[in-house]
Length: 127
Image 1 (tube, rainbow, N blue to C red):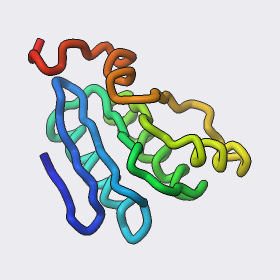
Image 2: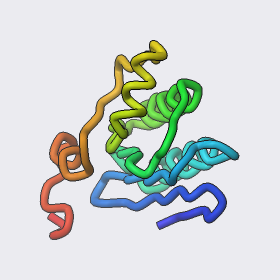
Image 3: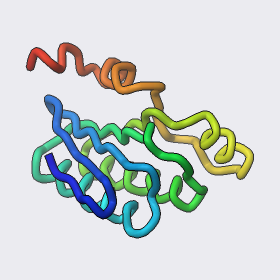
Image 4: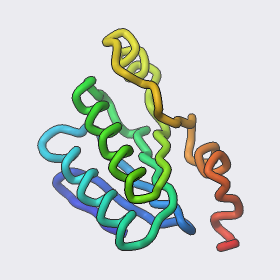
């Protein structure tokens, strides 16, 4: 598990899935830290999927959203499918009202749903 106190980004591998947990905001270099950690760990650990766990985010503007989408696309080039999890209703409303391009992303309400959609079952048991 990797973390950065400054950006509050955590990465944890569960089976062949990397879960990147993001703190309260993506400003001040946090988005760059997400990119660095996610792409490094997908490459070095051979992850087949990546979940961006965003439930702690208080606010996300369209530039930050586009940045996350770009990281997702980069992970795809490395062979990992991505999913966004835990977006707050207010953030979703803001993104839609701002005409953010949401096409092409996969999303889930929570981590359990994301793991199921990615075909990762019995994660705790190691199966």
